[in-house]
Image 1: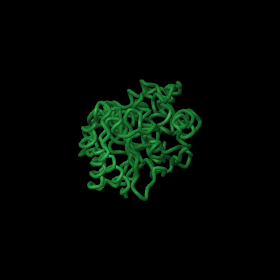
Image 2 (image 1 turned 120 degrees about the vertical axis):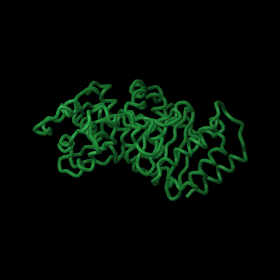
Image 3 (image 1 turned 90 degrees about the vertical axis):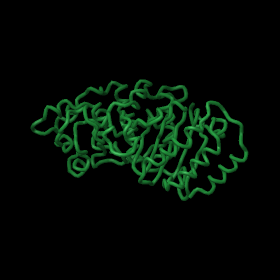
Length: 338
């Protein structure tokens, strides 16, 4: 599949009435949705926006950016530029503290990817509040052994971006453009950078809803797009499974299922990249489906709960008869979104 194509929901085994219920529930839960796109079996069955937002809007992805940073690391591994076992201290010898702790010496690229760098609490505020972000990262204490303890850590993702930048001589946007963005039909994006021109990695990428859906579809297809294998299938399979135990996280169940390479494991065999205020790229392999959404919300669990409760059970294994009344009801619901 070279690009996203469109189909009626029933053709993809999704009742139009289930989509109406999903949209109604999203509004009733005040999910603050900006846009939503759902694809199944390679075809978009729902594409909508809440006025005044537009599907053409380029949206801040917040931490959904992390999944793109991870993919850049995957390309660098594929090209032999680095290994997941490489020690992080090896990339920036000029930034290291005078005394390098034994734990810091053992920190690997994979520890950064899995949010198990050894920090506790998250050092991001301290790192980004300093004048030398890379140096400040290495100066943070490591109370736990890298690889053993999950702590969500945006500064660790920034270091991944800095490593790729140093190895390739270019920011992530330039590195990913011919490898990922161009093949997916994504225009050169804005990605916020530090004062040195290093893309933030952990946040700051701006894309459209369809761009997010294309990225999710690429993962669903295990890295294949059209007749090209863009990302190695073994990288895709490894990136979305649990490498860190995040059951120590309070509250929401979809934040406790495990953490991969800058991706969250979900319930129901799904996984996702996500960002603050409800930016989602949910991949559902068992249902051959992808959900992309942009939002401005605080309860990040609410849209996922609506997805699991209302849409997932309605997905049929084969095409369904067209329901004209339900289809008309869906059109009416879409026209009234604001």
